[in-house]
Amino acid sequence: MGRKLLTEHVNVEGIETFEVYRKHGGYRAVEKALKTMTPDEVVDEVKKSGLRGRGGAGFPTGLKWSFLAKPEGVPRYLVCNADESEPGTFKDRYLMSKLPHLLIEGMIAGSYALGARTSYIYIRGELLYVLRILEKAIAEAYAAGFLGENILGSGYSLDLHVHPGAGAYICGEETALLESLEGKRGNPRNKPPFPAVQGLYARPTVVNNVESIASVVPILNEGGDEYAKLGVGKSTGTKLFSACGHLNKPGIYELELGVPVEEFIYSDEYCGGIWKGRELKAVVAGGSSVPILPKELILKTAAGENRLMTYESLSDGGFVTGTMLGSGGFIAMDETTCIVKNTWNFSRFYHHESCGQCSPCREGTGWLEKVLHRLEHGHGSMHDIDLVVSVAKQIEGNTICPLGEAAAWPVAAAVRHFRDEFEWHVKHPREATQPGAVYQGAGVLA
Amino acid sequence: MAPTTAPSKLQFSPAGQTEIKRLLTHYPADRSKSVLLPVLHIAQAEFGGWVSPEVQDLVAETLGIRPIEVYEVATFYTMYNLKPVGKHVLEICRTGPCMLRGSDELTANLERITGAKVGETSPDGNFTLKEVECLAACGFAPVVQVREQYYESLDTTEAVDAMLNDLRAQIHRPILPWEMLGEVHSQQQQ
Image (cartoon, rainbow over all chains, first blue to last red):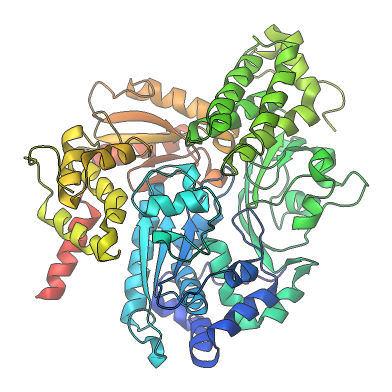
């Protein structure tokens, strides 16, 4: 069992209250930062930790912080991205509802480091019940003097607010999130200017994922160098993984980065293997946007090495034989899963969630959904299989925001690794569209 | 900016008005439009679970912005219902991870039990069925969200029955969170 830096106390009775959280070492990181460190020292500590953005992109958090413009007399903002919507991902909801003070503590330390005097947590609207939990915890933090004027007598003041979205995956894209926070439609902005220069209200802004901000707390408590000793190579520290799909024990697991994928799936300590005694067929390892991999490539790299739960190991082989760690949304599929149906389902998702601003995405996601629908329902042709790959290619790289890539990658990867299953739907439509039909072809099942 | 419609006959409840005032303090004075999404949530909860054009006009009037600024937002976000709904809107997740654990079957069951198809309201007016995309609860699939509640692991008849019974018991107008907040605030003032 590896170390747990974020969820160590998650099962303690009453840990969602200020009193119990404080009793278990809570708010030590804020005390340390405000009483003994300069803001730049906090940034340096996060840089040393090697922490990479936990929302999906994996960009180094400390580096992102150091890009923030700091013109004299202009307010700047820290905004927490709690718009968790990537299919397969449910770690932030868990963290916020169980450990609201951990996020608040991270927000205070982060805001201090960046010189923000007002900070926001943008939470997806579906999680209004979590917003109530956070508001209650924020009120407790104000009452205890950890928010508001002159925190702990340090001279530093901070207001923290929670803001709900209202149902839009696209608002997880940071500039769409900022538009939404300004009371507008969630249309991503053209970049540059980047939020670090012109973000919320056209002022310098950092947007970080919930787990990234929460991770600042153990980083300050342990020290950046100590945190960086955990994990493997550039994948430092611990990370929350959301395990779902056909697993015996789906749920949230905090892992020290570097656990072998095979151990994560099959060990009783983690997911406990595939449900109903079935075989694993495929895994989407980092949220629905990342390439799907068949069993043999998720357990081992093309070179035959054990695949590990790290940024580098999961992306080993690029998009030909690898995937991405992404948000840590780990979706396992058993041998009875129809890859064509699953690909169509994900395409419907991206079509539904496209903001409609860029034609390649607005039209392309619609075509992907439509053509995959007819392939799944036995009306497709062999040409359709090449057509979806071609449409995906034409979306990729031609849109303002990464939703285009997110829609294109899963389709391209599904055809790359499971082409014979798509062809089976074309050649044997009657068989393939029977309820519960399972493709038994060679080369796919291990 | 002057509203372009006649003054609204609708009104937020006193607790709703108090909550809107509280939320307005969260944003810079010249950026009060930021409060639009939260206010639309309040409006939807106070006016029958959907935002009619009249309700959207009320929101515009309350915030001093043009009606089109409300319309364009209300039609963008999927949580705002633009048509009348039943007493409970069942938002059924249909995305991959839920589908892998039986959301198609769940939807079919709910259609059979309630007598409403997806997008419709049951004949007794109690339930509207709505398919939505990922609710961030994939490890507890299949999942339904109803207002501020999540019902998880709905892969057994018992779990589905328990959810529906729970909702039938709340068939009267629910207490809104800001009404309770309002009570807390007024207690603090006394």
